[in-house]
Length: 243
Length: 308
Image (tube, rainbow over the protein chains, first blue to last red):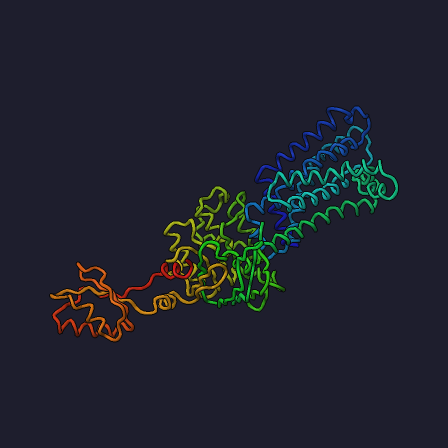
């Protein structure tokens, strides 16, 4: 556990050292702030003291930002050769991958924490549903966990960061849109399977403030599957000796 | 901690990188790993350090085997890879701190170890810079510091002195020699004088197989078979020198290297008895010795002879 946290700490420091963190925070807050408060169907237009507008926007902005955060996690180390060096250290692949996951997840948590003024404002101007707010943030965190898992897996597949970004986006897109479309067009078991795989069904459930274990299992298992596959991929690199 | 490589093989696709390689390195020994490009040096080192799995055979470090006790072994190995990969965006101190913690150095000792490594590797002036801002030589020092930060019992160094200035090379060689007294060190290099200066034992491999194994002196002896002596004589009527030498039982082939300056080279079995004979003969024939020097086959010659 200590090793995992050491790795996570290094990843976080690296995000802030390389400006990635600042760019990500500014873009995320800029986008979501703009569409939550100023433009489009913002809170004032909707006329309800509810953060559901923000949650709907963050659901999309995070979807695009997370692959950009995760693309370098393993691909860069494969390219520079540090992966090779890390394999010779007294840590196992699981700790390494998990550390990277926690690092990226922490950054997302910081980004969400920066929206705290939104909540304060909301309590000033109205009487929002606290359960819904907690649920929304929980949903965003869980969704991020899933996509970080997917992103880390994509990053382990290649030593090219752009390719890793695109792979993560394509896999993410299936959960975000494609499965939803398929579930609407298919009937029977196939339809039900795709309905279950569609991320927005699970997200909207939690974002309404209804925390259901089934939804949590969904997000957590995608994250775990991604990390597990990434770990297997690193094992494969180790066996062949060619990164 | 002894390192035993036991019948290890590795193939890349159809190309055999290492085939059935076996050797042993003992504690207190510095092993120089030589071989032409693509001989399998780096592959072998990677398999010992476990950034690559062995295909067949086994490698044992102390009582542990890479097949079952990988993580345990990795705690006791320090590795400096060939191209010295580093996290370039990290400051030197942070990087060493990270490496120490990842290797399981207790938190209370981390700062002590870092201080020691900064001193040993001469990083004091550059310690607060980011690694990406350092010159190649300083990066190499960071690579060495990283390999030694957890005070490992086995050190695997892939071309440790590349990019260092001559002063630093001397210091690092001395450091490796000192470390080699208590630890097990395997280093690979292309600089042959370096091997003679630092290594207790030399292992030459070619196309994945061992072609020579021994100390520098024993390899030289093996390669030449006999001692070579170079003699320059003075005096009158030196025309019979070659015949005289050849008539002695302990000398072999004699060749006149440079007739104008009266220089001969000859193979002898025993330098002492040759010198005794020579002195006697000179006194009898009125010659005198200007120069007499045993010449050695250089490591370069041995290397070329074995790997070309």
